[in-house]
Length: 69
Image (cartoon, rainbow, N blue to C red; front, side):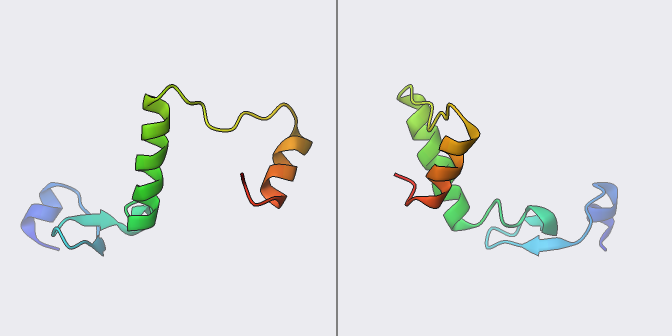
């Protein structure tokens, strides 16, 4: 661990192309596919969308069993 990482209390993690070190338990959040999904939902929200709203557990489970559309 370098002096800088010690001062910042940075513990080893995943290294990204930008040179930023991330905690390994957060690396999947920063994956390209996950970030694309984050942008998609933010665009939906900016248009006033609420995503899928389910009236019951069964409706939710049926949605998961389907193709999601």
